[in-house]
Image (tube, rainbow, N blue to C red; front, side):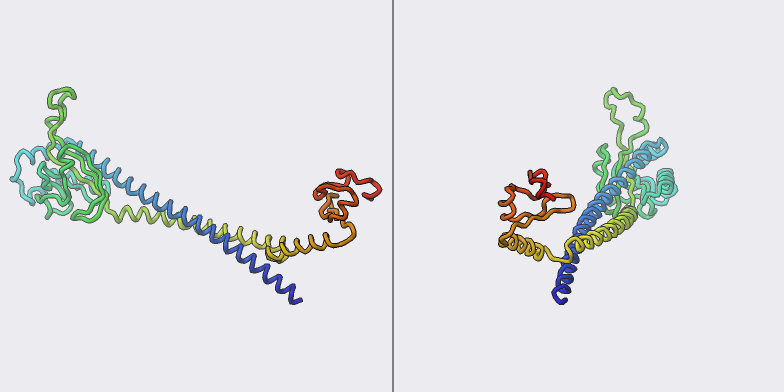
Length: 295
């Protein structure tokens, strides 16, 4: 009784270890997949924010009214004051774009990098906090930087003089003169909020996958315990060795036949008496055993 109970406990221990191992594998796989998806989602959200900022900046920089206003401000530098700029066409246009798109900021500068438009009117007429050199050189720039309004995904696009806009593409000096730049940004917190929504959805799926894996592992472990009759692998190996020793040690021939008529056990004595070679898994008819002996 005590030995049987000990075996059952050992078998349960083996089943539990198997269950724990399976759960660990499921947890690791789900964890790696969740982290990978989270990193990918983060990268995609950052790229999407930068792409959106670039598209808005391009649209604003091509606005004829904005181009004309920036061209006028650049042609007569140092005249407009912060209060004048606050009510000027550049500020009004930029703020309308910002409110319509939900951007953190839409900043417009002249060709010296001085602000003509900014969400904070007190910053007007001041030099921008981030380097405008690339945009003022006529090239677009997409960055992730920190300015007066905090960290953001931002894009900078040159503003070209309206008077040069209709010049033929093949005309001498056809590059339109850069008179300023438009900078559009989206707050890092907004981007992170989008990432948080994605991660929450991933977490729900991961928990469901973990739950399914746990249930499946539990079923497999219980089935394994039943199939092994509550024995540990070492005990099963010992039983096989004991059986082999017993079959080899007896003087009589021992032949075991399964329900399907195939040989399951055959000790050396039985094989010698019946002239059998590798009989396990084959039927007596296949082995050429005489019908009288089969019965």
